[in-house]
Every structure is written in C-alpha cells, then in structure tokens.
Image (cartoon, rainbow, N blue to C red; front, side):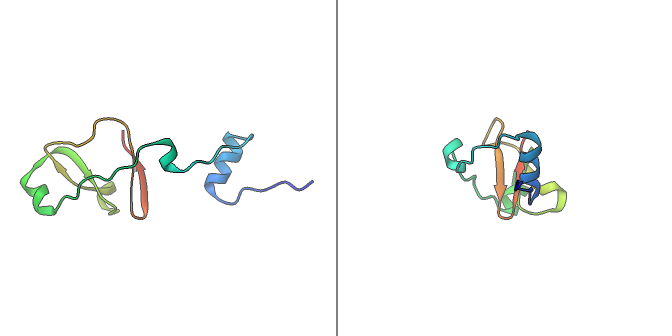
Amino acid sequence: MNIKKPVNKIEKLIDELCPAGVEFRQVGEICQISRGRVMSKDYLKANIGEYPVYSSQTANQGVFGRINTYDYDGKYVIWTTGNIGVTH
C-alpha cells in the first residue's frame, strides 16, 4: 500500500485536521478581492491616530503606522507581497 506523506506544513495540517481531504478553490471564488489605498509616510504623519496601517515590512509586526480613520470594518484576510496575515 502506497501512503502519501505530507510534504509541507499545510499538507501536514490538512492530513491531521481533515483526513478526508479538502476542496481547493481560487481565492476569488470564495471572497471579493480588493486593494486598499496607498498611504505615504507624510500622510501617516499628518493623520496620526489609533488605527493600524499594515505593510509588508517585518518590523513592528507589519504595522507601518497608525491613522485617525479606517477604510474597512470587519474581519478580513490581508496580504502584501511576500506575506499573509489575518486581521481581528
């Protein structure tokens, strides 16, 4: 009997948590994809506040700065070039 062994972390999690397997879908099939607005350092300085602005940087857990307003209200999956994260 030839048993497929998990190769990476995702496959290991699927094997452990979903032994019957999972259905793979394109991201655009399960959610709406949109791009947030681009904010400069000058904009951040002029609009300092409590709401985090995320970036692909690795410093400060990806928080690029904080502003006084927000564009989205809810739970979202966010990603930038090279990184992925979940907002709460």
